[in-house]
Length: 146
Image 1: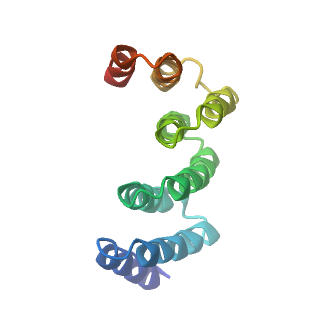
Image 2: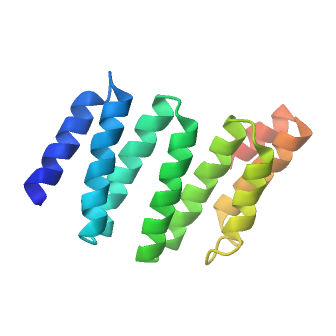
Image 3: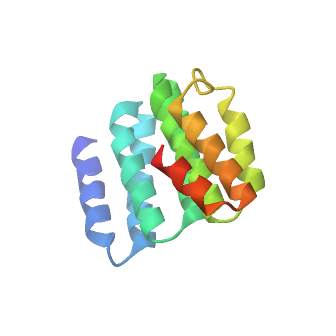
């Protein structure tokens, strides 16, 4: 198991710069193994790498789907502060693709997560969403600075 997983991650890293689809497939396979083996902590790093790869490759929908899987993994571990960060990432990506309705849904989804309403991520996401709706570049800058 360990060797196979390490090999998949090395293959993903090698493919990543030129072939996002191939790298994604390797990362997905590694995640499947880690999840089956209930190695949720180890999966976190793979999720982060995969989201980064997809964002760099401008596959924002793929990144959003991966974040959903990462959130489920983090909830399994009860790592609520990291769930908050991922939800903020989803808000930013939804705004990047121009979907304020989905960004709003992420904020509402977060209300069911322990501590989200009191978090800095909630404040920042809500402020960013409001600034985006008002098309106020100064408010956007201020929200991002949070």
